[in-house]
Length: 375
Image (tube, rainbow, N blue to C red):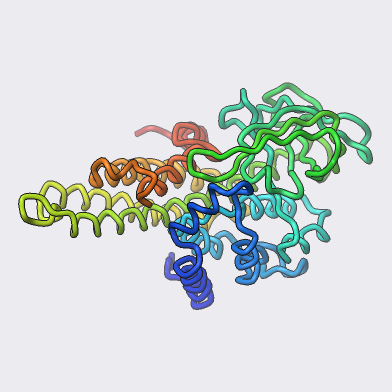
């Protein structure tokens, strides 16, 4: 498999990196995440101008028709730059709309950067099981309403539209009976409690009380769409994690070259060199698995997609924890301070590891795939 980026992928990634270095540096990001809105309209406009909101949208809806392999290089740069705009939430929502069908006009607006989306999928009791849904759908198909409580909705307070999973019928953990619905963030019966997560990004708790909603597809049949879309999103998070690890590794290497002890740079100590070598191995293994996940995230073979994406999430999650912890320790006490970028990369890696399934969840999922056996 050729892991080298195509020329247009490289050019887009380079343009995004130049903008981040010029206008979205660490100080600017800190101001943004601590602002009342938690986002920057100017940064969002630049993401739109670069074509990032249009990248994963089909050409028929004004997008570029990019797949997960194209998104890999974008997400890697966003991870490296710690960009906190609600981009991932919006493109994940766009993926749901694309797979569900019937929302072509809305996809055109997403591609143009006119609409921000958020996916309200998790609930307090569900942990990482997206099929564990207590929220309910009521009313006829043409006048549906949703009731329930969703937690940790990334970008929920900044979204114009929410994509919500709810149950039309069946037991609480049944995969049959799940529906996906589109809810206007300004509608009645909706309460959004916005807050800042550990990584500085905005997440919301959302309560729906017979909120008017539009069904996406046929009621009770949304599980295949939900699973395929979140696998695609999980692959993108792997790419973002690789970008964050890459930047964190580079920052740690620079620190070891400049921090002096006993009259020499601490990077000259063999024990620390060994730890950096271990970090590099974890990083490169994670990069390879993340690229493989991006290559398979669009696959029509659901079994292969599940197997590869979960394997990548496990390997990337383990690498993120190792690289993050080692980087913090090698920075000493400075590694956990808000003033140092290393702490922010570590926090973002921690948050990624808890989004769309943690290592334990994906390990169980991988082991549960057909054909798995322990030697």
